[in-house]
Image (tube, rainbow, N blue to C red):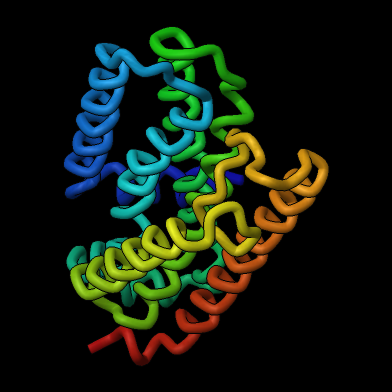
Length: 230
């Protein structure tokens, strides 16, 4: 338990250190900008609008610690030390990912709470949970690509291209179970409510499955430690 607390404390320093404050600031500025526009807009704001409003600050929060985690450890010259820890992939990386996901859930839920007071009544906890499920796939893919590229900037480029591609497909897929950005709070379009809820459940199961596979694949890549030590 003592070792676990030390690992959590260390990883909190890694997650909140370095350039994370810039991503946190950018996500808050983006949130304030969109919220400010919505407050002074004449159009009515719905819960489905809030979902899309919060998803991009969430991606920014998830982006840095998952994409630049390996790069930060290499820059701090502690990568080889981590490799020396027995089962380091689970004691360090899996714990770190868990901390990141909990942190992102907490922050987007707080932002949803603010929107509950400022814009429209909404289920705050459900909003935070639904957003976190979608953000999981971006965080786990960022982690996976970082174990392949082994460079933070290179991984960032891959993730930006992947994110833009997924957003482009979002416009063409519409309300499809394969759409990563499927909005659980939007009204069904030309389909029954029951069918839409079934499709939404399938969508979440697909996202969680992809996230689990990405984590396991990334952990397997970390087993090949010689590729990370130059």
